[in-house]
Image (cartoon, rainbow, N blue to C red):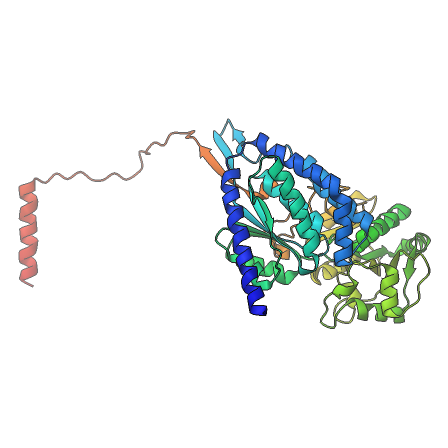
Length: 483
């Protein structure tokens, strides 16, 4: 029976990929205006179904906050569209009239999107818009715990796209989820490129599939509150970020680094705004239930409320506690809450100054967030600029890190797929957009003549007649025969 399911899931994967390939060959001929019509229809469909999809995601995955998932769905449609609508992706996209180089955008082909259980609907929306914008088709391999909501999202997007003129099969997904089916898609000849959003093992598998891939790794974001910061606003931003969808965006803060001169003020403000500080025994209890013995996240507690986590840990917390704060004096194996938590739980450290904050942030990032995101709250621009040397590709300043990292509250490219660069094992170091999902041809005209230089060696002229050459050959042959 298991064998039959695996075989049928593999066959479904092949069928979905083949249909997407056929659709893409048609879509590749579409003009920018035709693609624009399809995108607008997809955005409108998301707007009409954002709440329903959010409810499906919460009901199926048991993760996060309904209202915040609605926000993420609308962000992945409206904000992404507003950002990408003027990006040239097909036909002539750039022309340098001085260097006489013309750049022409062409689709990559069929995109495979591997989506997470934390942001299943919004990631599907984002990746679909980016794919279609570049004239690509896309198929999805959803997370096993988010199949229904992911496929519902695909269905809504596909129906809207087809009604607007797109070919059948342009957006697809597998419904029979298995490792073999996902593996089939990753290696299928009809798939051109992989966009993998999720755990490190899955991202590594995508990069090992033998074809181009965009994978994004985990975040373990340190948030440094420097002594010149607006403490009230900094705390407000951090709590807003950490409670947004119960902390499931990978760019959300994982530890506060409090500058020692303002530590007491930070603690007081955190408590005032609904944070509950755990004692040492409670830190140990929460650490044991939130993280596995091997150092990974307990999936049963991802995206859960502080009350749910406290109950599982067997501790009492005040009614209305918005986040749990775990004071820590180290990091690594003996400090499980120093790792990425994807829940409304924050580590808390005290640092002497910004230099110690630099050192500590690097070590925290090395636990699993290298290349991803760093957050700083400060009014001292000289100190802020010092952090550009740290091993991350997003440094968000005076803003909620989760929302700043995805481009909701900052000028970064709005995206649900955040590259971590080579430091984090990613092929891109920025937020993924449609510009990453096209190939670019270049038409290059000659702009300077090539002339042989006088100093270049010339082939010596031959002044021997044919009879003289024949005589020389006979002499050489006689010498060789004579030994």
